[in-house]
Image 1 (tube, chains in turn cyan, brown):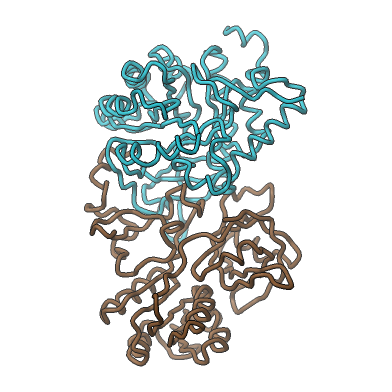
Image 2 (cartoon, rainbow over the protein chains, first blue to last red; image 1 turned 135 degrees about the vertical axis):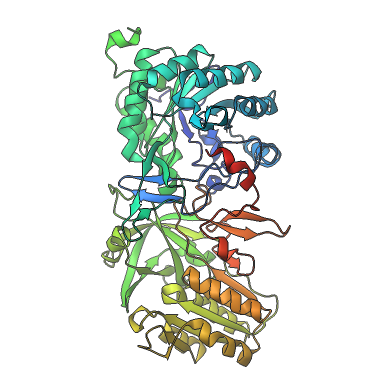
Length: 314
Length: 284
C-alpha cells in the first residue's frame, strides 16, 4: 500500500508535507548538492527584506544541549537580488518556493508583498512577524495581537489572491492562540508554528554572553515539546486553520508527531545543520511511519492525537 | 560533496593532538589542500547536534586499497572529547570535501608556509603539492609550547628543513612565527605566504606579507554550525572585488582567504561601512 502524501496549505497543494524551514536552507541551492530540492513539499526561503542587510557581529552561534542559539540578524542581499537570482534558480529546478518575508514596519511588509505579486515562482508567502516593529519602539509584531493582525491583514490585501499567506508566530507569548486567532481573523490562510525561543548563553571563561547579539533564538530538538504544544493548542482553538509545524524535527517520527498534533505540513530546520540531507530523510521516514501505522494518506493523520471533541472546535 | 558513514582506519596520537585516518574514497579523490570535513560527534542519540569542522591533513586516493583522508583533532570540549575517544574500526558520519582550497599560482613562485598549532595540518599536503610543481619553499611551524606543535617531522620529511618557534622556547626558536617570517621571505624571495592557525597569527602573518608587498593566503578556523553555506554563522568581514566589504561565509567562500582582504580589526564587530550595515538599525 502506498500512502497518499499530498497535503494542502490553504489553496496550495503540495506533493508531500515536508518542507525546509526559513533560515535553515538559504534559498535551496547549497542543499541541492545533497538531494533534489524539487522532491520536497517546498523550499522555504530565508527571510527576504527590502534592502541588503549585513546581519550582526560574530559570534553568531552557540551550541546548547540538544539545540543551538543563533543571532544572525537576518543577513541577506535584499529582494532585488532574491528576485534576480534565487527565485529563478528555484523555479528552474522545479522547486515550489515558499517565500519568507521580514520587515520592520507594515509598509515594508506590504512593499515586499507587492514585489512578489503575480510571480508564478512564488507558491506561498510566509510572513516572519517575529521582527521588531520600529513604529512601536521595537516590540515584536508577533507579541502583539493588533500589530500582528495589522501586518497580516495588509499583506493579505496586497498579495496575489492565488498566493496563500501564512503568519509565522513566536512561542514567546502568554497565549499563542490569541495571536493565532488575531492573524486568522485578519485573513491569514494559515499559520507557521513556531519560530525560535529567545535564549542566552554565558561563556564562563570570558564571563560574558557568548553571542555578539547577547541573546539569540533557540532551535533544535530542545524546543520540540514547546513547538508541539503550540501546534496542539492552536489546532484545538482553530481546527480549520492549516498549520505548518516546525521546531526540532529531526526524524520521520518527529514529523508524524506534528501531524498528529494538528499540523498539515512540517518544516525541517536546524536538523539540516547536522545532516544536510535531513529534509529528504525525514520525508522517507515519515512515509514509512505512516504506512506502518496503516494510514492511507497524510490527511488521515492530521490532528489524530486530539480527542474527538477537539476536532469540532470546542 | 559526499555524506558518508566512514570507518576509522587508524588513530594516532601526535603531541597534544589526535590524527584520524578514515576510509572515504570519494573525499580522497576530490581533495585539494585547504579542504575540510565536517564530522558528526556524540553518536546517534547525542545532544550535540552540530558537526565539527576539521581541516584535512592528508589524502590517499585509492589504488589497491580504498582511499583515505586524515584530519587532526585538538580536544577542547565535549564534542572533540567524544571524537578523540573513538577507536580504529569505529565509524564516523562525515561530510566533505568542503570549502575552497588554497589557490595555487599558474606557474611556480617561491612561497613560505606558516602553521600555528594544529593549523600546520592542511599545510603538509600543500607543501607536498607545491614541491611537486617545482615551487621553492620554506616552512615555519609554531605553537605556544613544544607539545602544541604539529607536523614538524612530517614537514621535515617532505621539505627537508623546517623552522620551529615556540612562545615559551620549549622547542626551536623562542618567539612567534612572525618573528621568523621576514627572514624566510627574504631568503626564498617569496611572493606568497600560505598560513593556517589561530586568528591572531593569521592577522599578524597578513600584516608581514603586506609589509613585504606579497600575497597572504590564509585558512581561517571560524566557529561553524552547518559547514555547507546555509546557516550564516561563520562569517568574516572581507573586502570584495568592488572595494566594498561584506560578511562572507568561511565555510563556502573560505576557509582560505586573501589575508589582505580580511578586515582583521573588524572581526567580531559590525563596521558601519559593511554592505547592509545601514539596515541593522531596526534589529531583527
